[in-house]
Image (cartoon, one colour):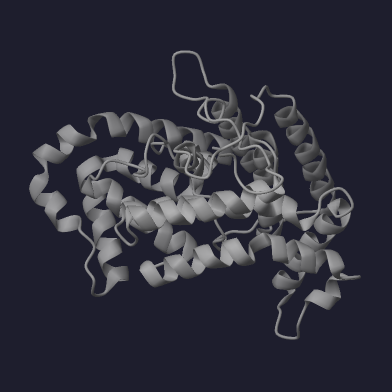
Length: 340
């Protein structure tokens, strides 16, 4: 079975399982009480929890876990890195260009001015997490990504811990701060200033790491005249916004803190980007750079999932949820101050 088929089946299974989750939980409350994360020996507890989840939901729960962990597109090391040839790199560049052109052709309302205290800012901030939220079937109507059901809380903890190495409030805030102040914007700038990939390497790097740096350097050199470092703002901010919502959902930060973080992220992204389409293109762009660093030859499928999510957010689907970006226009860039 291909990676595409596995991910599609995982997403479909997650949606099916979610519909019956409450009923199953009610019948298995005794087991559910046992899957809370222990503050001691978290790694062992996580493994035990997954066994219990498997008892509760069988194959569906295994697929849910796979969907949540795989579709969360963050910087984790790949267990099995496939060969990514120069020929495939070129094909991925072409696919990126084609996909970004399709995004550019999508309809979008004109940007509108936001007042400083406009309630739309909170909505806009939540929607900055739209791509990852859509891929994971998270709720985009409010700050909480899911209902507060133990199974879902455990899975969100698993995503944040395993994909990001975040184990609590301090780690969360440090990571959000990194994405807001440095992130891939800084990485892109550094790689763009290097005359050769060897300038970015050190003696401790193994061959795999050197190949990773070379792939990323070739990507940046190809696009640096077309896109500046600020174009990566969507990739950095979109992920930081998702982390803020996850952290709030888990109780690591308060909702007021999350709103403040999303406000700050909103101000950063509108200084660099000018539409939801450009935001989506930035996410695709940064996503491919990340995949090249990972040496993941399935990057083409990844771009497809991102593009599908962005399309749903911009256009919606008949008789289904979607179009959240369309219904919340991008804030118009202001010259001086805010609209009053």
